[in-house]
Image 1 (cartoon, helix red, strand yellow):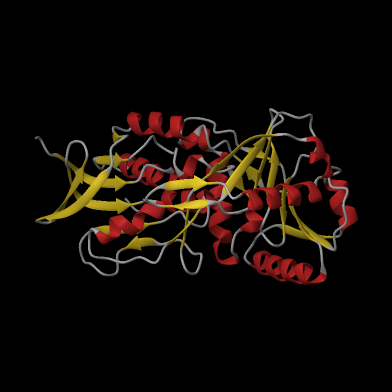
Image 2 (spheres, rainbow, N blue to C red):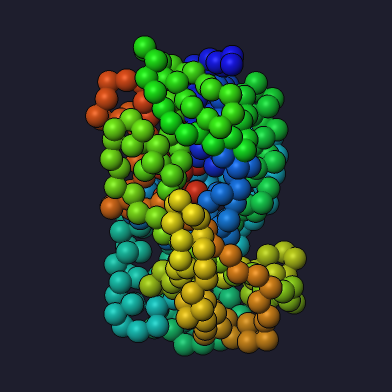
Length: 348
């Protein structure tokens, strides 16, 4: 069997892996992307596409702001629009403890450069008339946006092909061997040889790193997402709460996306398995509490995704510290927004 040779092999065809591959290809490298399914259809395609500045850790605010600019200008550098839309975002605190937590975190984000306002509930209702409940405090970021995660795979596939990047979709990597000064990537298709590796496997990075004798402490979360039937417009802003247990937005077609990290069951090996009914009900009740107009909404579908979480909630990016071989480790566990910025400035 013929072994295909490249300068770089990117294992993982999510948003992070595809962006790395695209910029490396534009830098003149021969690049291959290996993805076990379709591009941007695993974790990168099962989320609500939220690009909310005010939910990012303070340390990542500068990168989140630059990432948002990349999302805003995908037509320029990716060659396609991906449904980027600015809605502004509100986050609510419903008791004094939540208010103190929200205010403290917001001040840290403001100090890092985030344009977030601390406002009262009356001002929040002026911004979003769909909110008719009571709150102790709220914050507002006019830059908060979202994109359509269902469009990114098509956009990246076309851009990568245009740059001559080899795309191995529906091809699972099964192991990595050292081959002199290079790596031999075993797959369930044709083998691949590359002088450098980028591991961008998200929750599957744990297994990939173990092929090289490296242990990485990544936890796999299994959050659920729910979409309603189409409804008349009932709110416009991107909605969250201080506890972080709600992500709420209404799409242009009238459907409402409801999330917030409420967990289902599953793991990296078997994927998302089952929705936990109590968690689904809790998520829907919280959404209704914030936007009462959801009272008549009917759920159309609920699904599960997988998220990679590091111990400190910071991304892992850069050369592997345990090896002098040209190996890099990358994880998009904070959010696909932050991961995109890191990938966009990957050195060529």
